[in-house]
Image 1 (cartoon, rainbow, N blue to C red):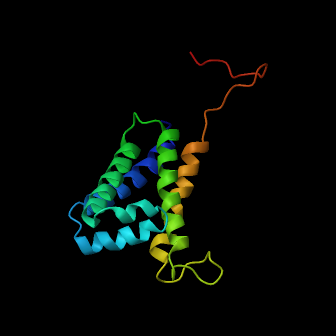
Image 2 (cartoon, rainbow, N blue to C red; image 1 turned 30 degrees about the horizontal axis):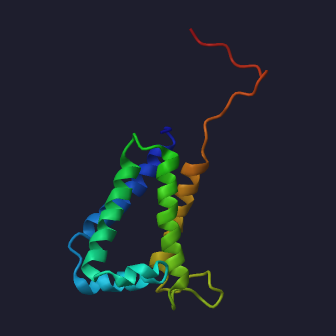
Length: 146
């Protein structure tokens, strides 16, 4: 993990971990509402019991948050997981009626809480695309400091 990844992973990981911890005791009605939105993206989740879906969502968020916070998890892998998660949230946003304006992109007031998750997709892209510089063959390098 690079030093520049720490703020990205720390803030995002803590946010997602906290969200997952908050969903541990999700009541059936709240879980059913989230399940209905998720079923627009992943239809098989509609066959689950709402309480089981709530627990699965909680565990998934806690796992992702912990992976982002753990320094031994490679940044590219953590970024890939975050990209799948945030991409799913943004797909849910686009497929839920009333979340977007007529253009299908800009959020309505109701859609802002989901549309704001676009920041996680940007962080995922930064973690995936950031690479160590590879020295160019034959390029002059600075002398080592003794």
